[in-house]
Image (cartoon, rainbow over all chains, first blue to last red; front, side, top):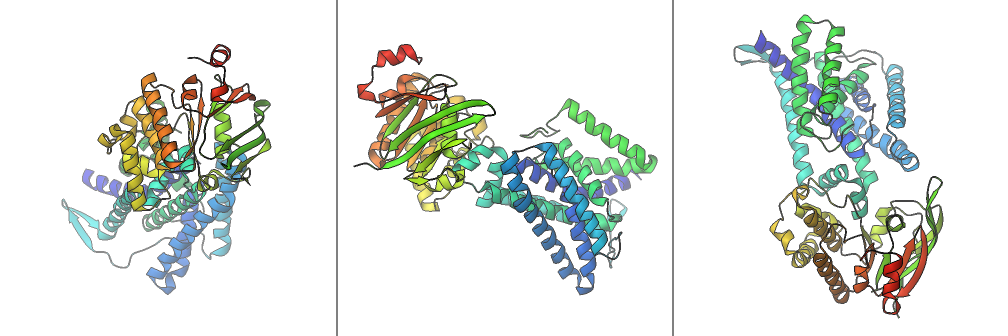
Length: 286
Length: 236
């Protein structure tokens, strides 16, 4: 039973690691607390659901494209100009992106026939790990999450674009001075971050329901986990997500939803007090 | 007749109600080494950062090669051949020496980049020894060398360095200044240095004196009364 809990926890954590990576990337590079990330992702998931009749692949591509474009457009046309005028005002951007999330939520309600959706895989092969039965689809989900993590790291270290967002996250002033197009970098990471949020939301939709408010929950969890792991630190985010996933999984057995939240907030508060830069550290503390 | 490469006209920069620069006008001709000297708080950093595009002036004009760049961002100014090495936060701490230098040569292709890096290592052999080392783990002096190296790798027409001597031993400062003059002699790069110490006057052709946001004097170094300057404004 313990092993089952751990495996479930790893699955949940693996799925959560996607919005966590999105949050870590966006906050690490732009310094903005963007509260709309996961809601953009959920919007994309609703697009997938709408496009399913055309086939699973076109549907997912539609979701990826939607999240990418909304993420890009949001940063490029709304947030970048605001940064130019107002500088980096954390509270202001929190409120604005919260508002964007609200608008997107409303759009979901208006544009799509159902306010709640979930995804069900058609084939369920069972994998046996340590005498526990695991749905292979879950394993695929985690594999994808890890694969994306490695891909991102590789991209950051080898390509010019990747290095430019890594540099921007470390030293915005120098990045500007050497001629990095920081506005493009900001928009690009926003697009990628929202797409990560989408993939996470999609897989979340295979475990639980996606509703109008799921975006808030996922984003909140994303931020807590990212901060605990050390924001901007992708590995830290992944490890933190796995640990949190296991905690969620175990406490789900003997704590009601409300107490679960209390425990999560408690851990979050404790980490902020003891190690504000997160467990694995980061260049920024919130 | 050397061309006017960089100029500011009546540049005024304010932080809220505090005026950091008041109607500062200065000019730099191609191939010159110009020093801006002044005590702490004179506005040297504000001046250079405004020219580079990090700060917006309240009034005034900045021109690069007679082109008005006042409304342009740092990216466009970089493209027009301007490069600033700031006083602080001037390296990418978590990246290697090599990656740092490659950022300087951001626009160059692979071949030119390796040429430029070779040049930087010639000037600073210590950096070649530490090519894969993470910048944040180097000593203060080495980090400053790396920052200047990034500036050299930029291969820009105008290189501005804010307080290069800060935290460096006088002998090291002297050798870096000589290095900069050699680079100017060999490649024609125009150099603007802001300094608290008068060491910069060793290599500068002209010097501007800045105090409390205003230009106090502008003079050819050879015509300057050194003792007067020393006693009025600067540390040795």
